[in-house]
Length: 137
Length: 137
DNA sequence: TCAATATATTAGAATGATTCTAAAGTGTTT
DNA sequence: AAACACTTTAGAATCATTCTAATATATTGA
Ligand SMILES: [Mn+2]
Ligand SMILES: [Mn+2]
Ligand SMILES: [Zn+2]
Ligand SMILES: [Zn+2]
Image (cartoon, rainbow over all chains, first blue to last red; front, side, top):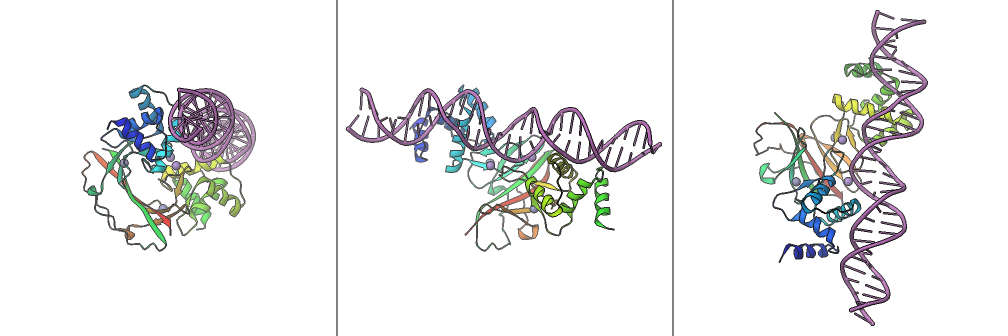
């Protein structure tokens, strides 16, 4: 099964038609080994430079929002003027380097289990995530 | 020492002149027992309703940014279109109720100590904060 | 296959939070 | 009070994101 078929199935399973633009976005987002942390601007640059394709901003935003709602990517909570997204959709933690603006994953194994001592009657826990802010030097 | 004198000193210690507008903001932000989590819009409404005062948006933003830079309030990382601030400037954790958009503090005592297993050569840890997202039901 | 229908793409406009501008006002110092 | 420094203000500018509605493409089924 080549990637295009794979991505077509992925899109269809999400109720999205496999258009040329969406397939290009899939290549950038999902055909990679390492997690991709990105802003819309980052993504647009990669689409332009790596694939030499121009996609309208409306399509980029619409498709990213569709992927987010389908759980194929997720949004990261950061104090930034731009929204960050993450291709790692598991519950995981981040280092944010305030000197370089780099965002790096760390995983459950990199931190001792987080145990809440507080009761939350009537509430359901959706995620527990740690943000470690670091600076250089 | 009345509050006005207290707030005047606080402002001066931060290199800010104690103007009428800034003193009103201090009353709202710092004359309270419970932590205040707010957006600029929240703050503007409180200034208008509780103190019946109108302050220009530029003054509200400039003063809040000055307080943030002085460490008198801090910004909270949330996936929201608006920026949230917090009068609790200690390193602490939050519950964010995605159903009601409520943001609630929890403290070190409410969670077991967070121990990183990862080495960070050349980096200085600035903060370690947990965000627990919950929903109702 | 090909027309009918549904969905997607696009350029550009609209929106809304935040920042900037520069003119008028206030606080401080001597 | 005069001189100077800082502040407030209304409104404009900026910028990320969303909306609009015209055009294009994908899918369906006869
Ligand atoms: Mn910010
Ligand atoms: Mn958002
Ligand atoms: Zn990540
Ligand atoms: Zn808080």
